[in-house]
Image (tube, rainbow, N blue to C red; front, side):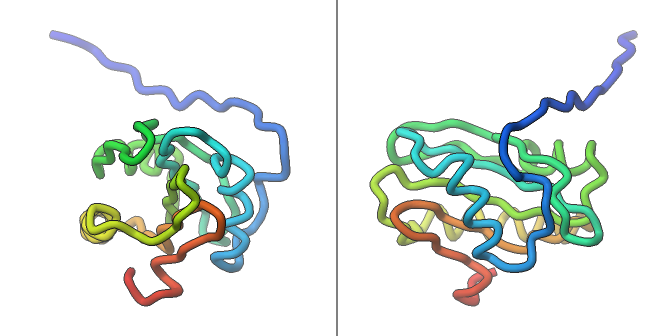
Length: 141
């Protein structure tokens, strides 16, 4: 028999990350600062409390130039461990073009369904590049 101990490790970040998110542009600015200029796709989750204040940022995966592996299990693991009320997910497009791919849309819908089942709402999925694409603003969430 195995005994497991799960521990969430908090690391300090430089920057003004721990603030309230009131709009997609607020989250977009934070994500742009965090992953905006990466040379590969980074998929990130912003964990929020009941007042939409960011309680944590977690990089779920780092992919290649044009893809990143994302599974709901990995996205919601940190959200569950940090008692998040809701999350915002985002990833960058190193090409700068923020147009969502079909895979981006499918991942968004899969995460939305998983969040509903777990009781952790996904407020938005943002794509960061030369600009910012918001699934919520564009009616796709």
